[in-house]
Length: 556
Image: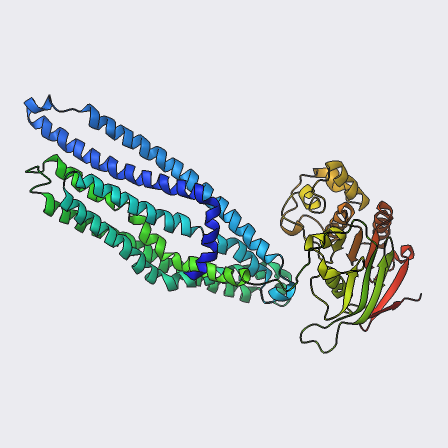
């Protein structure tokens, strides 16, 4: 249960809505029990009064009828309000949990997450956090509401007979404590297995969808589908096991309800309070006992899923407990960019025989345009990763305006350095929102200008800025996605632009025009351009060649 503590602490941020949801659940239960109890007594009392003509005139039909109507309306209203408030509170809580998780995840370096696949991280952020809503909707609310409702029921029965009130209340509280313990134990292993099988199926399905071409080429499509089918069957078996537990809990509650009802009839049939025989009050006792198990019904079903919730919390907690390997200082972004200097930089990947960067030196001055050429794998992208502090250099120093790079805030670096990597990520959102990632305050006119400068103006002209780009920008070609990344670079206000193979996949003519437009857009902008193509080299102030982890002037 200790795995849940970090998440329970966040509940305090929404304690008002969560408490109101519990209060409404209590009112709903009290209304249900009161409605059934009063209705049973009213029908029985009306029947008894009708048997004696002289007593029928004395019987007050109006007050109990009004009570039935009041409880009926209030129960309906409380049920509706409880659904609205509790689900609203749950959605807000899940949004807080997901934001909190992402805030802890974002500062972690690639090396810390190298053992986790993208699909696994996404599954933890979405499915595992969704599983945490069981804590409030299925555990906290039913237990608290059930306990309060039982106390209210005891007060009702105690008004007529204290002995019966204590017996019924004691029995219900004993079951309220026993059900969670029993069904938590029964559902622990099936719940954890269900979580693992669901995660495995999602990851395998994602791999199958992404690797369609490779599977078809190597004739492995059918084998992969068979593995998916086996994982799906394992998941269905786990769901059947949980369904059997649900059926067992409901059967047990129904059976116990009957036995407790027989016990209360046997204890109260001869006398209830001072009434001998009890008459219509016995009907009140009977229907109150029947209704009381409505408070217990959700509890057993909830605790059988606690194992699944705990498994989700255990998968999330290791990421939450990670400390970022990159530490940032407190310096804010410089008002003007002067220089970016690299002195004797060295870096070697874990397990590699040779360093990818070895005693590398480079100085970028304000407004300077520098291109770096080199074979694939020579360390060009690694250099940009070090400049943006994805990794820390193992030797040497990087300085921004003469100050160590690690002395700046993370936000200061993102405001000063705009990095467009080889892989441009397109969010499942509109064209406008994908562009405003770089400049949240940009107007529609500015977005259109940026698109036109990278020759994507037709996207806005044909379908508008509000067109949906789909998951990963699936409606765009590879070249369009890269140019969309360049449009973001145009909109970003950073004085230093770091481009990593930004025109890969573009024809030479388009590449030359797009780069010319980018250079003309802000001539004072500093540019470090990683490429293996020569279309824009004539527009560079310097062209460097990377080889053996070092930089040298390129000749020719």
